[in-house]
Length: 345
Length: 261
Image (cartoon, rainbow over all chains, first blue to last red; front, side, top):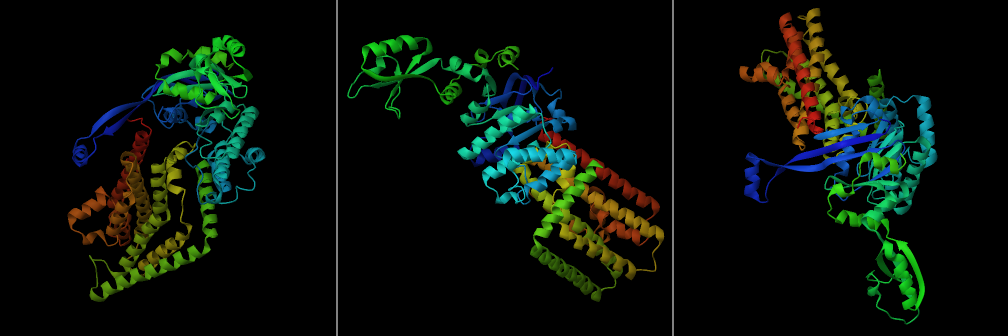
């Protein structure tokens, strides 16, 4: 298989102790513990081609991190198979570990007390990177992330954005071919987020690395990913192009209307109406995509329209809608082969 | 070779860090010297009242104090700092990064932090051992000194293994911050010769939680008290302890990744 990541009916069930609140329940559970099975990931299947950047989305607790941990080899699944670059991740073969990386935005890889440069040296020894290669990679990362001024300072003296740059550099020194990124921009300000984003895009372009990325910032996803995989309650809910998602989940368009000064009209006759005027003094009418032309024509002929425009629903809103809908996974999930083809992998 | 490179890089990083905090180092070393003086004072008080303790003379007890200090130095230089780090990494999830590195997790977990200034502790320990041995000179044999060295090394390995087992238990309990406190308490039991304890307790500290093997037994070998088969038996116990600890560690790792569930 030439793909970078293949996942087949992968499942993970956690056994968690369960008890009711209160002292007596606590005392009872000390002696006889009751367990409950929690399905974190349920029979998820997908495939990612080499060089793809895929957004991995889902609300908190959807099973994203558990999936990433299985794919990087930290967790054994309770069922199913996974193949990353030809390796079974949880065998944790050194050659496998040398070709992947995992970045968790909320957890620091670098030691707090020592400069990042020292941690880099340790990584060089651990990953057996020869001196020439090490210098070359570091120079390249320095060019993209402007590391030089910050890697000599103890990590605890760095700002969050500077630290994330160092974290990324440490995670990429060994030149991994597959990157699992779990919330790499969390907590960063807008500028720093944009820097990380453009870095990832450029890194992918230069090295052809495959990236599977989770983020709660939709801007990360829309800027980097053409394809998204969405899971909810551990089940695959959508796998496909980001533009297709709107069509499937929210096949509607927004018509923005501004009437001439003083004119009043009941716009609810034309479609679902947004509560407020937007910053341009327009009201937004939501109409089914296939009705856009006819509704627009009616608006123009029946009302004193000063200005009108047609927009797509913002992807953030579409994704939020997808999360909130409790539809079964099967309806949205498509066979892997088809998904691969469409994204041109 | 690979492991050696990793280890030497860790040492280098720790030395650099030590150099960055000069004042700290000076204070730490002065404290250490005061504590050693205190220990020696305690011993001299005991020996103004009695000529022997559990059949051991002053010189032998100084040697035992040295051995005890040596294990203690291991404790302070490696075990405490790395355990603290391990427990934190376990709780906040950063241990995941260590487990994804293409190097043995055990190497990284046990040698990332090295309290370099504790080298002084090792020097003091060795000095005490040499003084003790010289004080009780006369009865020394080449075989005795050799088996002493052998058992001393295996004692250090035993102590290290017990620590690894303690760390590994954390994989089952998640919160087990006392993992090293227990070890320290056991070590305190090794400060005096195992022969001062009743036989049942002596059995426990020799075979079940073999702390005495790290402290008393080497000095017994030095005194020429041990037969060759006893030396072999104690080395055999060391091998078993290492093997069992490594198994517990691996089982712990499997538990952590959900492979054993």
